[in-house]
Length: 89
Image 1 (tube, rainbow, N blue to C red):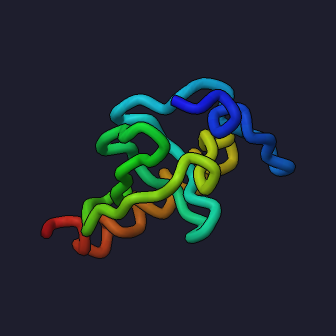
Image 2 (cartoon, rainbow, N blue to C red):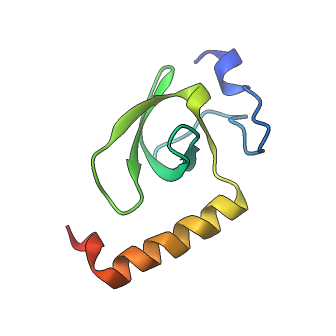
């Protein structure tokens, strides 16, 4: 992996100091949402929404490790989706 990409600074915190692994919770800066890593590809990661859905590919500079606040918001959002019954598919 390119060291410049993994050490990209993020003004909001939670930058990629180390390469992500499968199952890690990241935040896609472009979409502004928390996502799960499905696969790591050289300079890209394959991501999917927490409650399932269509995966997509993002370049490493476009993602960052989720902060504590991101994690709390993701849990609350996921619970709301499950309560409404939208996570069943």
